[in-house]
Length: 311
Image (cartoon, rainbow, N blue to C red; front, side):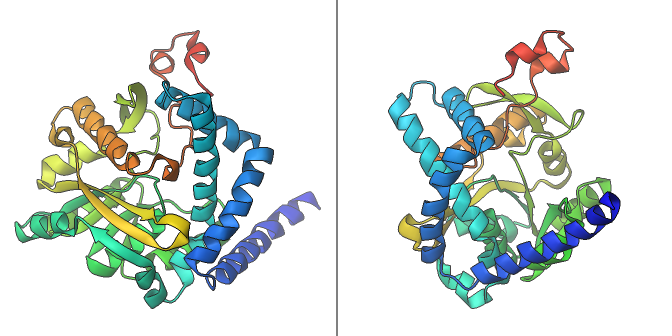
């Protein structure tokens, strides 16, 4: 009986989640922001995991920040993360004209246009800031765009999420060597590709590089792509405007170290580029992600490595 229940529940959950997204897609960004302002405090009060991870990250990233300021930033961060989740249906399912209208500003587009005019592809570092699904919408609406994609844990949601991300022309490729080959081909065609710069990779796929002066295990895919294609690198974010008025797309020139052949130097440049994006509005970064879960002591098989963890 338990097995049968487990077989049935994921599709039911998928239908419920997809239905919720469709309902939320009818709302405006302003109304979704108002809902987020109600939900964020509830997460702060009742979701220990999100609250404690956010606090731990902010304490180590901003050690000189006063307790009162850090508490306020924690609260605002969880409101923005709530808004991101509520806005998924809007980014994936709302009429394209509505999403396009919600994008009020675009800064730095010339970085992409100039690179392509020079016959180069563009690698867009897309950190977990603001609403990255809105960024995907804009990029795939204006450029040939390829991004890596890992199917969700609830398999029945895969066609919903994939459909939302691909509806404006984006090509999604798997997170494996075949997907990397697709990224290389896209860059050689002078197209744009997106990679996540702040997601902790599996052991063997990264190096430790400073992120806010603390070692963070960082993927080494970027220097491999740059070395083989001479692509330009930019950081891209969709920043939420005050009071849910919409979004501003920002493209920032990446730190020059991203072009280094040394993997640690390149990874340090990647993390510095993410820091520059976060500086636009620290509250919009997804601080509840365990970015410092892996430690150099763990990699060195130090038997006392757990003492160096922050969560």
